[in-house]
Amino acid sequence: MIEIPKFHETFIPILKILENGETLNTRELYQLVTDKFYSSLSQDQLEQKTKSGEILIINRIAWGKSYLKKGGFIEFPKRGMVRITAKGLANINKSLSLSDIENSSGFFEFYNEGNNNVDRTLNKIVNSSPQDLIDEGFDQIEKQVKDELLDKLKSIDPFYFEKVILILLKKMGYGDFIETSKTGDGGIDGIINEDKLGLDKIYIQAKRYCENKVREKEIRNFIGAMSGDTQKGVFVTTSSFDSAAIKKAGDAHHTIILIDGIKLVDLMHQYNVGLQIKATYEIKELDMDFFEEG
Image (cartoon, rainbow, N blue to C red; front, side, top):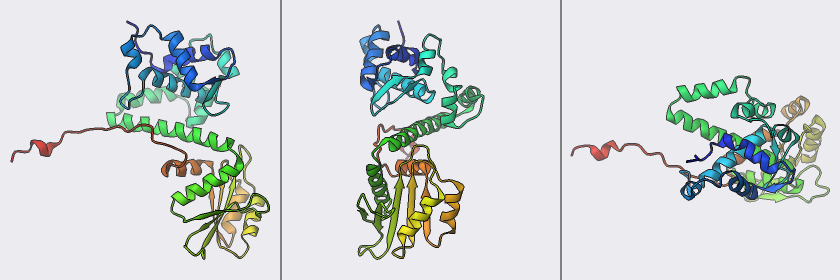
């Protein structure tokens, strides 16, 4: 009897479904892959679920899609949509293995690791406890979610991005916020009132950049916009700050906190902004007190 495929065994089926270059809805992709390549699975296999309650075959295809994305073989042009890339088309008739994906340049850039990734992965499996493997799995899922979150932040409307930042700071406990007008705000996107009367304020500047770094001039303008009204400011970007910008913020008489893209998604993940809990797992251990003699 045919077995449910491992996630890496779905690489080529996914690419085959996408080979005509069309952009497909993710759910449609899952169904097409299942119907074309795994229709011979039994009904019980098709309905088998993971510990968290997901359909197992769909879960495997979803992980295959995720790895193909990290390797640059497919892309997500917009929310919930997927299509093949030139790299994917070039590899569609090959035997694409997990090591091919993990050794691809795109995958290395995502995980920021050097060579011999596969050897290290195998070594972890051989020399790790079950708890270590669980923790490693959670780390990989967290990295994936943060990567997708940063991609999403870079693509949303700039004005909505400003609101996202204010919502995050509110969740972090920094009080009520006021959105400034969209024009003529003098470089200020929002104001946080740390106290009920608004006597102590924090000015916010949010820059949704894809690649460009925040420069020293933008920090200087931010400081100027703060004037004498407050001594506290938070400058947030989806990209990063160049060295001159970091120095300018550090040398300022004001207290200016810089939050780059990596720090931003860390905070959003920590405070559950723009994210939802997908699954909760229970791990049980023996209750020794239950077996204690009276």
